[in-house]
Image 1 (cartoon, one colour):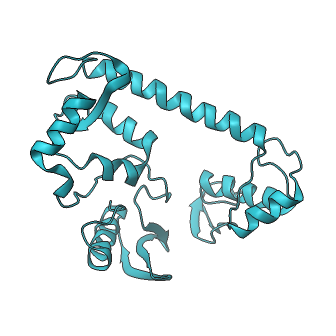
Image 2 (spheres, one colour):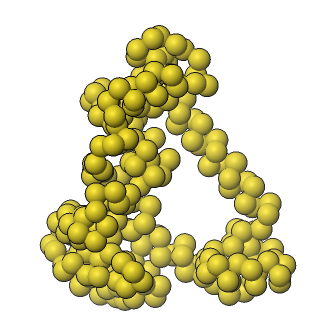
Image 3 (cartoon, helix red, strand yellow):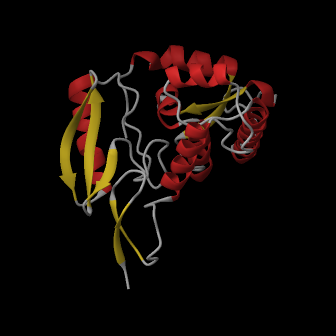
Length: 234
């Protein structure tokens, strides 16, 4: 037996087998908890009270999740260690040396896009998702290891910085922004709606049966509104 419910955080409709369910996803559970701790003025993780002057400053910046200084340091260190572990795995998978000159000092090895566009992709999807994508696509010929010198020389030779933006296909990797796995796509009444914010207003691109179709509609709107230099394509 299934139940039709409305999420208590985002108010989206969802179907579930648990009649006591209150949220449509784990993401909404976390966000709801963060909003509750924000209103109470306590740390999101350890529930310790936060200084009033700090709360006033944070509210001006419209941040909805609060961490105390100790929890922030622990979280940042965990993320940093996770990225370092991913980088070590990538270097091992891709031969641990520069593909041009054979330089093998790990401190100066870069993950290079063979066809360019690496900086835009990294900014669009973030370090963690980018590293997982590089690991999963090892052997496809899309990425390679280059030392800092060879990477800069290759970019200069191919004039990569002048190339137009290449859309980033996230595949099955989750997006940082939405539960659908695509930027600018959210569920609505059993379908998927495309939306993008432009000059302070949200512009809608219609609803579609699949999130991929909505993501393509989002890309088209982004291209018309922002041009090929926009950093947040799907």
